[in-house]
Length: 253
Image (cartoon, rainbow, N blue to C red; front, top):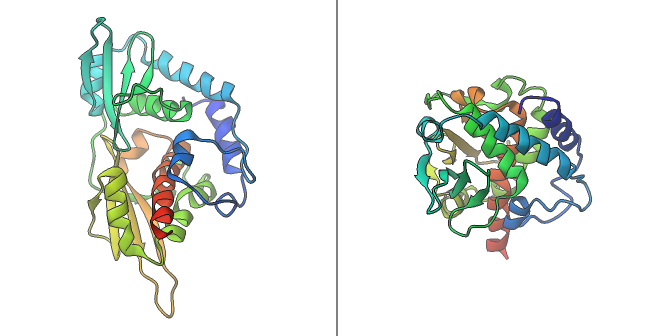
């Protein structure tokens, strides 16, 4: 969905101020997307429904097995004969029925939150033909990334440093628990999270000292520019950070 609807709701989100200082975050917060408290105005549900409709319309007529093969997903057929594509998203298997477009968690059968459905559909539409290149870029190197940089900093980079900067050794065990992350040889502490099959995201921390405070960043494989828009990437980055923030806070109590 590269049109006006996505721009409308993401611009509303990126206009927020003070979003990360307004409350204590829990792992379930970003999964359920219940953000009605101070500092947040949730986009109208109609915008998300329209985005899902556009995303599924783009996939209509595509061969589901071919889409699965090209996006790192797998194809299956349900007992009722309905074709299904299943892919891993943030360490959970998501199934999409190809005829009625139900998008649900495979292990529980629960419907995926609609905001995540939008991102999953964007991935399925954008990933065919993409390959992980092994070359890392910063968010501002993504096309239009500079325009959405403030939103990215507030949603992802700043919270990462806030949650783990003073205890960076927690990054690896927490992300392994939540995402099955793998260690990464960058900075002082770093991991790679596989957000989608073809979308690795690196989380990097540098320890502080007497002269400099702790610092951190998120890096993306260069191929992400062909899969997701800058708006989607900022949104995805926040989805990665919030659950590990919540777990880190719980473990401190």
